[in-house]
Image 1 (cartoon, rainbow, N blue to C red):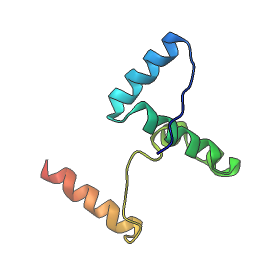
Image 2 (image 1 turned 135 degrees about the vertical axis):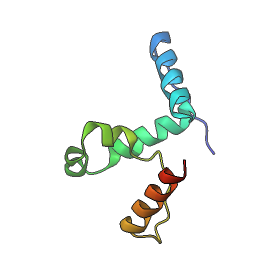
Image 3 (image 1 turned 90 degrees about the horizontal axis):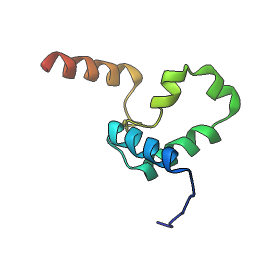
Image 4 (image 1 turned 90 degrees about the vertical axis):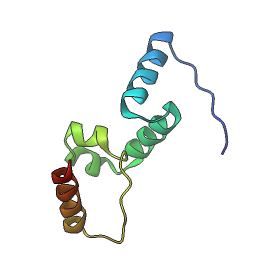
Length: 81
């Protein structure tokens, strides 16, 4: 994978590291998610609530399952906890 070096204020770098750590991902992965979100069509980004936009891309789901199947699995998994 190619490497990219970015420059930012020290406070911004620390915030990025803290946020990535809280989400359990790397700063690189978080940057990738940000770029994916920002490259989505503007109309699609506007329709999502801010919390949804911030969570976009964090979970990987099977494209072979319907939304209903994924929802049912999530409910069952939550009940097992």
